[in-house]
Image (cartoon, rainbow, N blue to C red; front, side, top):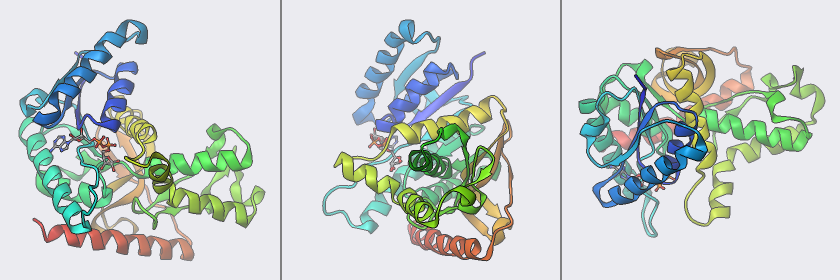
Length: 312
Ligand code: APR
């Protein structure tokens, strides 16, 4: 029996997710979107079915706006969202997003209560918190996809600067998905060689800064909309680790209950992703300056979560 993958939101990221999941033969794919957008997602699903002979995959790919169609899903990847409109305040935006995530959370809770859920919708740390509050799912069943993308960006920028294969760069980024995120150069290695032994501080600072602003850099280049290839791939990496029990250690926004001194918030931390979902949060012994940066990112996330709490 094939696995079932539900993609909630069939926009820019959702469509790339569908293509990657099909190409990797991860299972059958249902793309769910709002009724107004159901025909485009049905069209995208059909287009992908027609790509199968050359893509060399077997998968049933469908589009829907009915939550009943996600029944029995093994995994739900949530990208439902709405682009920011001109004149929208931060409050307007939060109200809109909380409404969307609430609808999605209820739909998943009623129809696919055992699915492992990966949330991508921004503001990420607050949306994954809201999703968890509304579903009441066990904490291992919910993760926010942020750190996996932030780390991919960090590794890519380092590879570009150092002119080495990105495959040889290992490192991680902690914290919230925004300008306060915490890349960890002290623990980054290039083919086993400490980054700090081969790169000067200027290079490291440049890469850290670019990583923190990477989402905005793409938005500015696009003019409209945000990144979609790299967020989709990052979510697929988490999904594969869950579906195939690969036991990858990947940064993600997980519910911390004591880890890193954090209580009751979703924050980017290294997670062991297995068939149990977020099986474990791995703890790093942080240096004093890293602890201070983590405290700052925590404060920023807490602020947005507190704003969200006023809506539900
Ligand atoms: N239920 C399901 N789908 C919804 C809902 C809803 N309640 N509301 C909106 N959508 C759909 C939209 O119709 C659209 O097709 O979600 C899709 C979002 O797609 P895009 O606007 O293209 O956004 P995308 O680039 O895919 O990003 C989605 O992920 O990284 C984040 O910041 C990004 O929050 C954004 C989200």
